[in-house]
Length: 49
Image (tube, rainbow, N blue to C red; front, side, top):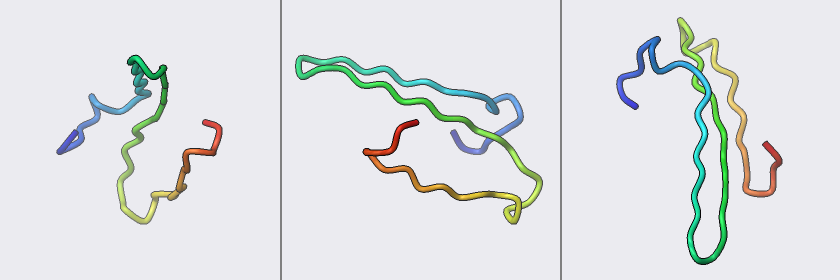
């Protein structure tokens, strides 16, 4: 989503299913005033969300 606006802020979910199985993921978009306010967290496949 680019450019982000206040209307896009919130929680998002993705659910996928195919012949090999299914997967789900969740994420959130939070808008901040300054880039200095952003806390970066790297998530790997093994991490539990």
